[in-house]
Image 1 (tube, rainbow, N blue to C red):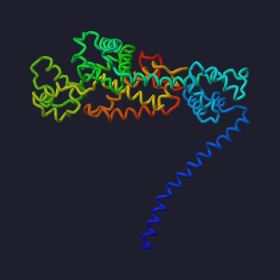
Image 2 (tube, rainbow, N blue to C red):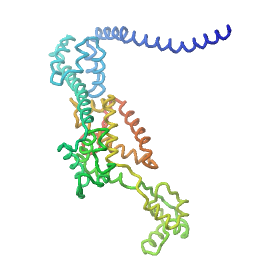
Image 3 (cartoon, one colour):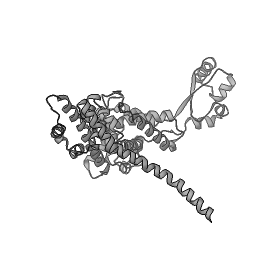
Image 4 (tube, one colour):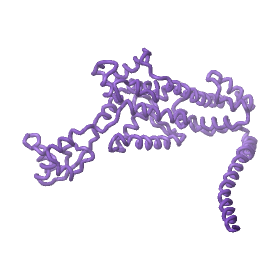
Length: 395
C-alpha cells in the first residue's frame, strides 16, 4: 500500500514540474516587461536624451518596420493617451500627435521631422483598423437580386470576362463559363458576401488581360509535353501516330526519328510505356479527356477569404504598412487580392495537382508560403501587373 502511494506521489510531482516551470517563466516575463524593461528604457532615455518613440523614428526607415514598432510602443505604454492613440479617428491624428509631443516634452521646433513621422505611422495604424471594418462590412453584406447596384456589378463582371458572348439570361448555365457553380451566381457569394464580387470585378476591370489569361488557363486541361528520343519507326508509329495516312502525320513521324522535338501533348498521368500500349480508341479517349483545371470565380471567392483572413489576423500589416504611404484603403486590399490571385494560379501550376480534390492541400501550402513572406517586415506583396504601379520591393 505504501509503495502505491509512493508511486502516485512521484508521478504527481513529475506532472507538476512542467506547470511550475511555466509559471516561473511567465513570472520572469512579467517582471521583465513591467520592471526591467521600463527601467532599461528610463536609463536609455537619460543617456540618449530621446524617448522610445524618437529612437524608433530616427533608427528605422519609413515602412512596416517603423510603424509596427510604433504601434507596439503605443499599445504597451502606461499612459492612457498613448494607448488610446491607435483608436482615434483619422481626422484627430494631427491633434493626437501634438498631445503626444507635449506629453513627452518634445519641442516640435527642434524636432520637426518627428511629428511628420509619427503622423504617418499613426495614419497607417488607424487606417488599417478602419480598413478591417470596411472589409468586414462588405463581407457581411449579402448579394441581393433585388438590389440594382448588385445586379449591375454582376452583369459588368460577365461583360469584362466574356466580352464576345452575350448572356442569354440572368439565370443561365453560361455562368459556369467563368467559374460559378450553378445557374445563379448569387448562391456562390454566401461565404464572402459582396466582398467576393468586388474583388473579382476589380481584377477583371483593372487588369483585364491577366484576368482573361487566368480564366482561360483555368478552363484548359493540364497537359505535359513528352520529349521522345530517336527510336524505331514501328515504336513511334504505334505510340504516337496510330494512323499515319495523312501527309502531316508522315512529316511529323520522320521529324521525330531525327530530332529531339516534342511531337504531341499527352495527359500528365500517361507515361511513355502506357502510351506505347494504347490502341487508337484509348489514345483518342485520353487525348480528349475532360480538363483538370479549377473554377475561376469560385477560386476567386476562396482567395478573397484567404486575403480576408490575412487582414483580420494582422499578418497583412507588413504589406500594407510598406505600400500605403499613409492610410491603407480598400484599393490596397483589392490590389493584394490581384497579387494573391495571380500567384495562386502560378502556384497551382507548379504544384501540378492530380485533380481539383487537392485544392485544399494546395491552398493551405500557398497560405503558409504567403505568411512566411509577410514575416519579413521589409517585404511587400505587390501585383506584377497593371493593377498597381507597385513592384515587389525590399525596403
